[in-house]
Each structure stands twice: as structure tokens, then as C-alpha cells.
Image (cartoon, rainbow, N blue to C red):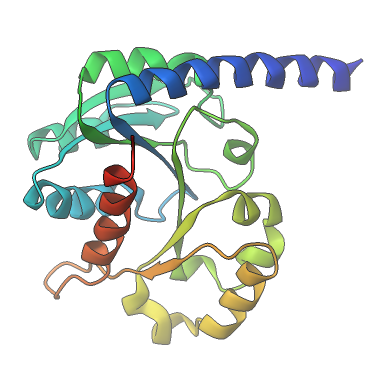
Length: 219
């Protein structure tokens, strides 16, 4: 009985996801579902990539998902990035049902809109939100074994941002092992990113170029 209920929930979610996809397409929005563990640097990544996209003349918005608070959305708003906040009140992921409300709050057209999912490497991979790009922020301090342990997530994504690369030596991160695990389940491109305060930023420009290409390929 539980399996049937879950199937029904996922089927209902997928129907709403298709409606979201049509909504985004009608407004020429590239929706990017950004997933990752707590502390992976998702919000910092959005901020850096948004700067690059805006240099190219593309508007950026964020639908921010958190269990509680509006800290990240408030910080992004201060940077001039139009943001809406969704609090899940304990749920470990966003679902398609709430995305439309968040999108209508920021009310953008001709834009890249990030959906910053709740920090989690399990549940978000099960729920289509109507996005065009599934992006995973995987941080170096989490370890190079994560593609082996979280196969559904790593096989689900279109691209991976490997964040906090300035810490590779400090934590003994094995890039070859990480790529071995990833390539066993996916050929998603990997963008190595370092956004350490006080040091030159790297990787954000390349990731922005990837998203800009996706945006320009939209009909």
C-alpha cells in the first residue's frame, strides 16, 4: 500500500512539473534546479554565477528553498537578485507544487532562474520540478567518495559544480576517484569552483558560460 501511495504522489508531482516546464518555456526562463548537501556552497555559487550572467545581459532570479528562515533569500535580494522564499517546515526537498508560486513571486521573463533546493543528497533527486537543468553542488570537504554513495543523485544531474576546490590539499581530496565514481553513472560535465574570500574566484565564469549556452539554445 505504501508503494502505491508513493507512486501516486510522484505521478501527481510529475504532472505539475510538466505544467511548470510549460510556464517557464512561455516566459523564456531557463530553470536550474540546484541541489547539494548543507554547506556545499549553493548560495555562494548562485551569487558568483549570477554576477557573470548579468555581465552578459541576462536577468537572474532565485526560488530559495529552506526548512526554515529567509537568510539566503534576504542576502541575495541585497545583491539585487530577485528572490522568493519557500520554507518546507521540515520537508527535505522541494516539489513541483510550490515552484509555480515561487516563480510568480519573482515574476521574471527572459531570465535564468535558480531553484535552490533544500540541502540533501537523497530526496531532491526523486522530484522533478519542471527544470531545464539539474545542477549539483558537490563540495570538496564532503569527500571524493560521494558519487559512489549517492548514485541516484549523481546519475540524475546534468552538470556538477565541484565547490571549495581550494581545500583539496587540506582534506586530501582525490579528484581521480571522484571522477571515477561520477563517470560510472553519468557523463555530466564538472566545473571546478573556488570562491574563497580574499582569493581570486575560479570556475564561476565557466559555469555561467555553460548555462548561458543552455539559455540561448531555448526556442
